[in-house]
Image (cartoon, rainbow, N blue to C red; front, side, top):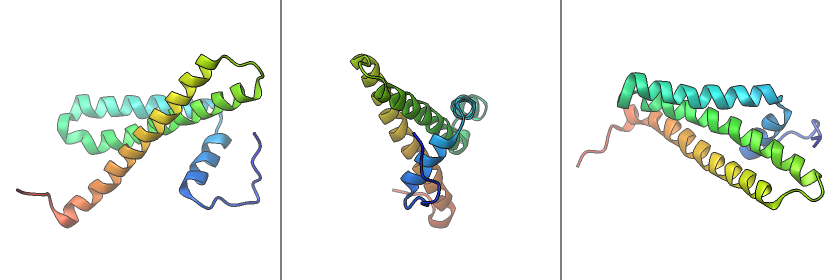
Amino acid sequence: MVEDPSVPPDTLSELLTLAARRAKDGQLATLAIAGCGGAVIFVLVLGRAGWLGAAAELAVGSFGIWGIADRELNLLYATPGSARGRVLRWRITKGVSAVTATLAAATAFGAMFIPLFGRWKT
């Protein structure tokens, strides 16, 4: 799929989609492996204290997985007679990785406000 580079993206969603579609396969795989692996390392090394770094790394890894799933789905849609089960698996992968990336990024971004507002105390 070729995007028209003269039209700038209007939303964050369009910007991320454009970035993922312009990335090479190796770049998306690197994002997925480094992001998910980095999240695991943060948790194993730092434990609960590393949750912020793990959330940021998980967002990056999930973006890489989302990009891979998007690319595979575009290939399957372009191929007549693609297996239904295979399309469904990639759609589920794309959806789960999008939700994971969104929640992880929101958590990491929201954590920047903890020093400003303090922690909730009951």
